[in-house]
Amino acid sequence: MNRDEAVILSRARGAFLGVAVGDALGATTEFMTPSEIRAKFGVHRKIVGGGWLHLKPGRVTDDTEMSLCLARAILQSGGWDLRAVADAFLAWMRGKPVDIGSTVRRGIRDYLLKGQLETPPNDWDAGNGAVMRMVPVALFTLGDERQLAELAVTQAHLTHNHPLSDAACITTGRMVQAALLGGDRFDLHVIARDLVARHPAFRFNDYPGRAGGYVVETMQTVFHYLFTTGSFEECLVGVVNQGGDADTTGAIAGMIAGALYGAEAIPSAWLKTLDAVVRREVEESAGRLVRLSPGFKPADKGESDEFRHAE
Ligand code: MN
Ligand code: MN
Image 1 (cartoon, helix red, strand yellow):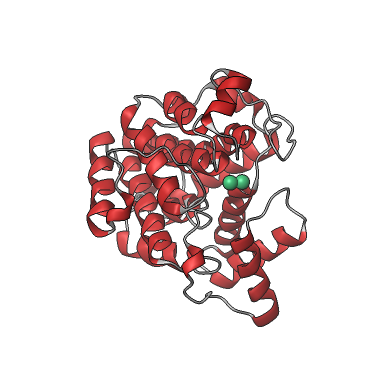
Image 2 (cartoon, protein in one colour):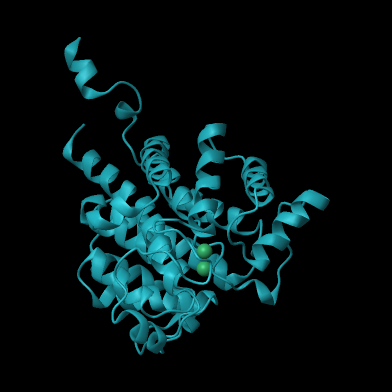
């Protein structure tokens, strides 16, 4: 494995671990206001569980679980199969998840009852629930921006069908991919500005401080902290102390910042506290997904370098 490939793998693991770590860290402050968080924690920067869902420390929620559903569907099918994704979501919903968004629930129910794989356009679908589960699609389509855009929207429309959600899904995927291929914060800023140029609602220059489940507020919060901090930890701490939909802003910020700074930049105390079973599946899936992608050199899809050199 050469250096570039090692970097891609570290950043891919960082992106998926970032989702899980951001979810687990942010679940504690979900639905709180910044001043409530300050009064209770000072600055919230440890994975301690609790929150409105009364979680064990390191427990993740729907953001990570739906991402794992997508990862399993891709890896078990060996490629893209939308029905396999819908089936994975359905199996997850039947397993009584600790949390599930109302738009997600409705979309999965419509698949169950009508076999519907694309929910109709709806003004109420501009939530962040399709963006939070983007990491497997970004890894699997690395190196093919057209396929990224197509699959981002296809997976989104199982539950969310709104132009702002679609645009945020594609942008998040593009940022993850740019970071995996060596992009820096400036490169990611260009991609965020491109989103704002097409959908001015996402403007994040004068951050208004709202961090709810509306995809515009979610992305503004993620962008603000991504571009005003210089490390994975400070980005995530900033995001989750904003409260609101903190587990989901945490998951999305973790995805992008994890791709940017790499797995080694994630605080080891956070990784140690993260649910061990989730951690293992997330790390393994990240590597397997990115190795399936066109961005990963074909020579490395087969035997390892060590094996070839031993011959
Ligand atoms: Mn959640
Ligand atoms: Mn949430």
